[in-house]
Amino acid sequence: MPVTELDVQTPDGVLDAYLHTPDGAAASASPLPVVVFYPDAGGVRDTMHQMAQRLADEGYAVAVVNYYYRQGKVSFDLNSTFADPDARTRIMAALAGADGALVARDTALLLDALAARGDVRADRVGAVGYCRGGNLAFTLAGAVPQRVAVAASIHGGSIATDAPNSPHLNADQIQGALYFAVATDDPHCTLEQQELLTTALDKAGVRYELDRYDAAHGFAVPDHTAPYDPAAAELHWQRITALFARELPR
Image (cartoon, rainbow, N blue to C red; front, side, top):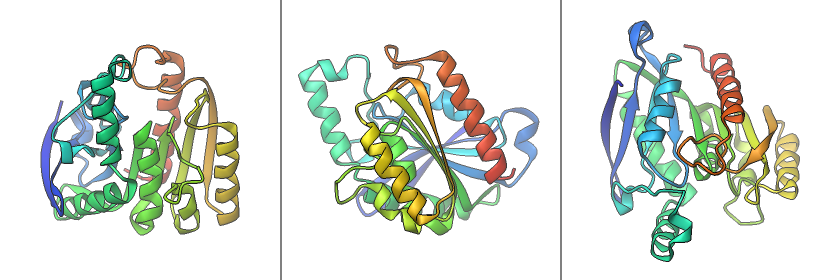
């Protein structure tokens, strides 16, 4: 799989990101549009790379972001982490260090670095994320709106809450198109939170689509075995590839 590690200096250290580019003929179509890829709470690992490569093979340069870089190159097994008190403590500390505003700032620095390359197009980008990453993709759309053409949140958690940093509060800043894949069985995105989200987006005049999947939180990620739903996962791939083809021309 064609992947290049990128190290980006931030005020807090060195962010590592992983740029996936297409296999085969699509790789010759340069410069490639950039899609920022935020992993789920498990962090950067083989499954995330495989998913990023699948999207890259549609004709994109997909940058997988290690938003846990302040803790190092860490990842977690979501099948067991929350049942192990020590592992749970570690993942909660890592998540606490990945504040949305900080991740958006770091991602802007990553986009600056990508903009200096001749083989990618990083002026207007896409973003996609899963679980916590879905929150971050939505956050990025409101934090650097002039740079985000399209963002997709897949079973994103806490995307509209009463917290002062909830990303829906920046709805009136968003310029790009949004897509939300919401699991019907998801305590991290309740019906009340969905209503809060859509009310904010409608009021701001944001272009968005929200699909409800008859599945559980985590349905799109193959190595999260309990909630993984192959049919729902495949449907989300159909939806996001069509979305990016429309909103982020190759």
